[in-house]
Length: 112
Image 1 (cartoon, rainbow, N blue to C red):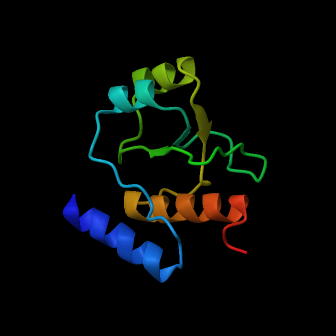
Image 2: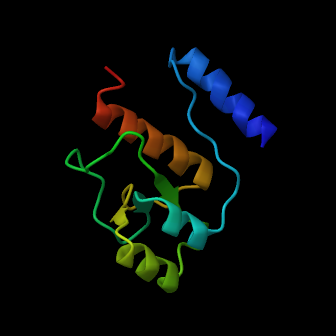
């Protein structure tokens, strides 16, 4: 956890951000789904578009290698989570995280 926090702080400072990206402790999916609202990034969902409604801050939940279970997807939908895709490619979680954060920054106008 300390390593992740250090990376977030250093990356945010390098990018000139006034606040570091939030890095939370690993949380069970069920707990995350009931405690927040946002978007699941998952295959088979509509593609990310500039019309995606992003609150500030936004929660983007990236699934595990095998994807979310049917039960997790059903629970998320019931609780009001949206579902979006980063496209047809299968990305590693590290790559999907960077791609999703970049799209969120771009859409919010944070990339200029």
